Image (cartoon, rainbow, N blue to C red; front, side, top):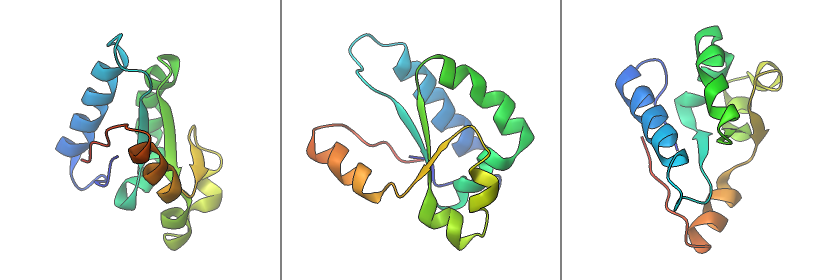
Length: 105
């Protein structure tokens, strides 16, 4: 889960790196990159869109928090981005209950 946006490129790169590396491990069943908080603005950036293409090609599911998008008034713009826009809070709780690990950047 990525909380940092453009203001912290190191955390953004770290999240991308971990997601990319994890997707290559045979013991890792599922990788999702969740854009949360300030990070919901990233999928609207043309540089991010270009950089995200290898993730979707590897099967990494990009999600963006709809509640944060609505707060920032970018929901319509995000709906055209290469991410699934949804309220992710319940998904995060469900994944933790199912034994998945959530790593936060």
